[in-house]
Length: 220
Image (cartoon, helix red, strand yellow):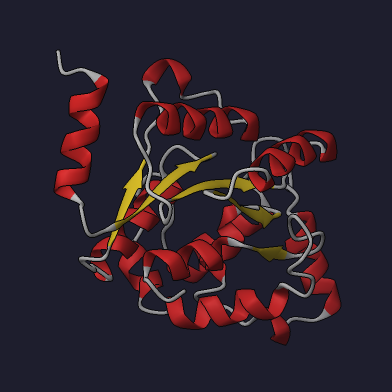
């Protein structure tokens, strides 16, 4: 079995001139599919995006605290360079302010750690590729923010809307390239929604995933 030092050497030899972006997400498939495709579409020898997977026994453990633990374990196992980045991708959704505050505080104490939170959820980021939120009425924007289910057995509002816009959508299988065609406009729409970028996460309808997308695309 290779020891930790040999793994570190292999990692640095493979990507010696590349900035490493490590991504861990609350969702098991949706975010992985998106960022894997984005990194492939915007391949750059100066950037290497690595998306962490959750093991089978951890597949139901998706709390922001657990995602942060994943990143910390990676950081302990592999030697990072000064310009490497660790990204925690999570939703506001049903998580408490106290939990998110703890996670955000720990991220802020580590220069390599970043939190890309979507309020209410990652589907907002996907929808921004297709919909100009500024064209929505206040009532429609409230529906997006509340993201309610019509019944206990139905999907949340944004997931239903995304399926309508795309024709077909499932967390583990969707036409990601159709979305990535519009990633530039999604970034600008998300930036306009981010009215208080100094806040630790968007307090209203918004997503910080655009910052991660820019990093993967080597735009920052």
